[in-house]
Length: 294
Image (cartoon, rainbow, N blue to C red; front, side, top):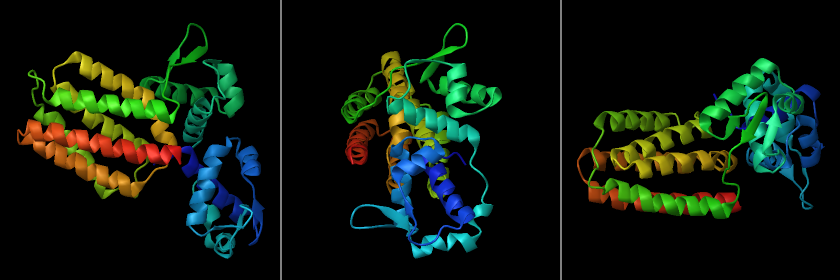
């Protein structure tokens, strides 16, 4: 399963505790973990918060974190037998995190990527190919690559959602709107699968399926400007979506809303669908912005 960088860190920290036999009360610092796993402190902070919620780390009055009694039991639990993290996923999310944190310049060579992320040429080629397909990096002549513009702040993220509210609702009401039943039924199947496996799928799985649905609806509008604008915006916001806290309960709720939206469209209720998508996007924007700001 595809993991974002914080997911990988949670696994790595558990493996570290088990493999090194760390005792209850052993302190773990954000800085120390960031240096050990060669990532920025933002995903480390998120991983620590998850481990606190799982009861494996404890937080003292001064804000420091240490291994709890439950966390110390990882030594006997067999946690160290878990499969090692996928190096391609580690590199992919490390690059994404560093780009969002402003730690990578606009232009980077393949040699610089390989040195910074300690991966082979073949692995790097696979990661760069994926990034290029997703639209947030492009090849330059020679061995260089250039990052394309992305949304990097809560303010621009909010503006993107307000723009979506305008164009996606309007697209459903376009006089050229023509329902692509096959595409929507395929999206309906994807949403049902996500809902059934909500505790297993990743943030990337959720983002890809949801953007496919919204873009499929935009394509039904018949307005090329709506379609192109939405696809461009989805490329811009991809990394911000990866960085925000992944809330599975909220994701399940959005899946159910998507299924309701699809039903309205399949039954020819365009005006109701336009009203529904406005509320859906407004609620999603409010919820996600709160998690980014927090």
